[in-house]
Image (cartoon, rainbow over all chains, first blue to last red; front, side, top):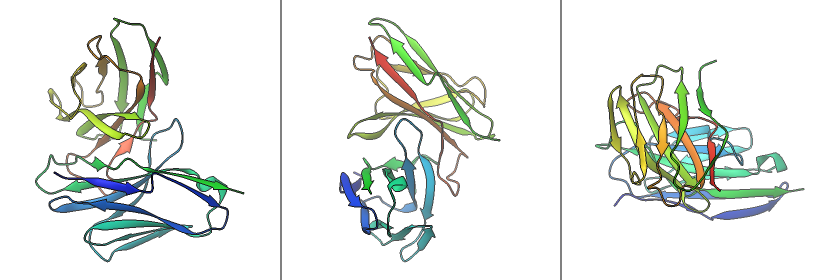
Length: 112
Length: 114
């Protein structure tokens, strides 16, 4: 059975304290791994897409990396405004075209 | 600007009532999806549609119904058969195949049973 597992479930960081969020996946034939940010009471917002092992994407304090079994979202010197839930999702070959499979998310809190 | 509009933002349902959540997109996307989000559970797929007049059950379709009469619209009805409907509901869309951003999401509807 395909699975997407995110860890930790929750993470509290002091402002400026760098860390990483993990997304491990066991899908048969990855078509893309997607990271989203979700603020409370709002819909998820797109951050990154990664397609192949070794690929990296960066945006401000965030950097996403991909291996054959997992992806990391590295947060460098976070600020309180980075507090949100971060969702990981994968698309897989042979599945309903366009469907994504989601992890449960990591709730990040950055305190001053 | 193109996007997905969900309405209402908040909805209250009495026991035994059916309620309908609206989802409209002006992105010319073929595929549309409904997800339910509960604390600690992640996003669970309720129904999806890849073309007009066609839709399929997702992982938790019991107690829900949908229609896709127009490309732009994909309303979700929460029926009285859904025993635990209190949740945050998200609508999403994309091209029939995965695009570079995966999904475009609406802003969500929070449904509460009173």
